[in-house]
Image 1 (cartoon, helix red, strand yellow):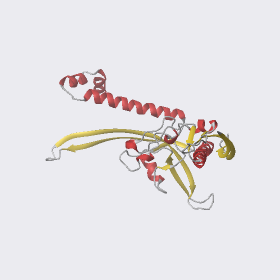
Image 2 (spheres, rainbow, N blue to C red):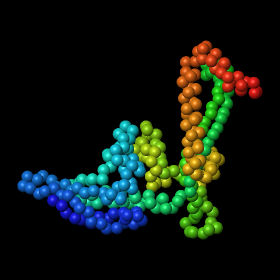
Image 3 (cartoon, rainbow, N blue to C red):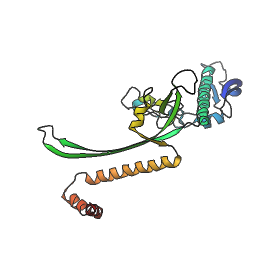
Length: 263
């Protein structure tokens, strides 16, 4: 049995909500019927726009850590025993789509945050503070962030002091924490996850080198990071279980000899 009902749905351009009628398939009523279910489809323009954009809209579903943050496959066809539930599902999807479109049109300012550091630390054993040589660390980190300035006070005054905020639209949560279910799984959402507390942008800026974002720059630093990872893995595999033969191989390496001659 088919019925036709109105729903609040995001418009084709995702700029507003509008009323639209959808066809609802309803369980046929018979003498032995126990319950009635209603089936409809999320409009194609809406489903296509939001599917696979966040963990809760993944076509194949999302499996969180230790059953936390798990979401079932997000299908265009939805079924419920309550029409209100169908309306709720489509309304939530529409609200998300409109907010996502708003963010796209806002053309938020993106930056790349970079931290490269090296350090050498004099080491000792815990037993009797015997000299244990020097420990050298090399660290590289980069990520894309958004930045905006807002008035410090509620009133809109161009001369009022500004507060700068850096934030991400992705969030990584410790897998063992109670917030593991809030991990966005590498997807950008419509939420803002702050990198620092209120009015503490200066501390964040001292910790990271911040440059303007371009697609080419992000791709470059991605390659840099992948090279660091590759080099680290290759060195780790080679130096694992270091023995006399490996040491001799390292000493005979032409690049190392060249480096020594240039000292």
